[in-house]
Image 1: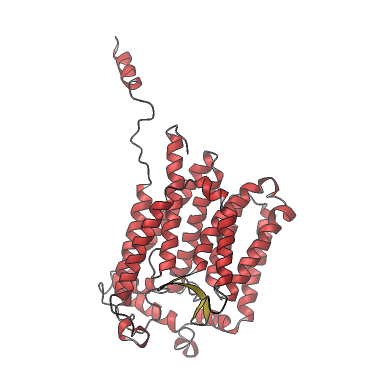
Image 2 (image 1 turned 180 degrees about the horizontal axis):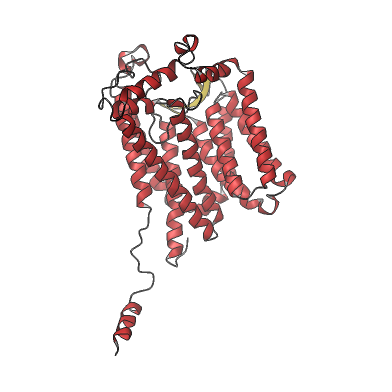
Length: 397
C-alpha cells in the first residue's frame, strides 16, 4: 500500500462529526466575565463611601457590592437556564414576551404598583427587590423585531405593510417610556429596532426617512422640555459658572475625575470624586471612577472588552444568517447593537462627548435589573452560537 493510500485510510478512519471545535464561544464568555468582574470591583470602590452620606444611612459599605454580586450570581444561573432554550422557542413566543414586557411598562406607571424615585416611575417592587421593566423591553424589542422582519419579509420594502405597523408599535413603547420618563432607554430601544430593520433589508428610502423623523422627534422633545434643553447647553460649555454647579455638575466632576487619573490612574480605591462629589458614581458615572482610579488604560480595557463582545455578537449573527438561520442571526446582532449603543452613550456622557443622560454601562454599572437582562441576552447569543456549531458538525440546531 502506498503512503498516500495509508494516509487516506487513516483520515477515513476518523469517526464522522469528530472535531476539536468547542460547543461555546470562549472569547465571548471570557470578555463578559471580565467585564462583570470589573463591574463588581468598581461598584465596591465607587459605592464604599455612600454609607457615610445622608442617602446611605440604611446601607453598610458592603451593601452595594453584595447586592451586585448576588444579582451577578442569579443572572449567571438564569443565563445557564436560557442556554437550554432553543432559539426557535424565542421566535414562537416573541409576541407573548413582547406583550408581557409592554404590560410591565403599563403596571410601573400605576400608583401603588410602580415605585417612584427621583421623580421617575421606573421600578416594580418584587418583595425586598425592585425590577426595571425597561431593561426587559430592550431584549423584548430584539426578539419581536427579529420575528417581525421574518414574518414581514415579503413586505419589508413596503411603507404601508412593512414599516407602518412597526412604527405604531414603537410609538406605543415610546409613549410608555416617556411617561416614566426614561429617554435613555427609549433611545436604546429605538436604535435596536432600527438596527435590526436595517440589517433585515428595509427599504433604504423608508429607513432614511424614518431616521430623519425620529431624530427630529428627539430634537423636538429636548427643545420642548426646558430641563433637557439646559443639559444640552451645559454639555456645550460645562465650565460656564451658570452650569458648573448646577446642570453640568455631574459632567464637570466626571471630567475632573478622568483628568485626575491621567494614564494609569491614582490607584484602586484612591478616587476623590466618589466621596460625595460625583453623583451616581456607582451607576451612570462609573466610567469616571474607572478613569480616576485606573486611568486611561482602565477605560481602554473596558472599551476593548465591549468591542470584543460586539464583534462576536455580529460575527455569530453573520454565521447564523449565512446558514439561513435568519431569526437567530438578527437576534445576535440585535444584542450587539444594544450593548454597542448603550456603552457608547454611557462612556460618551462620562467623557463629555454627549449630553448628560442617565444610562448605565452594561455588565458594569450597579443595578440588578440591568445585569440580569444583560447576562440573559449574552446567553441567548451563546445559544445562537451553539446551534451554529451543531449545524457545522452536521447535526441539528
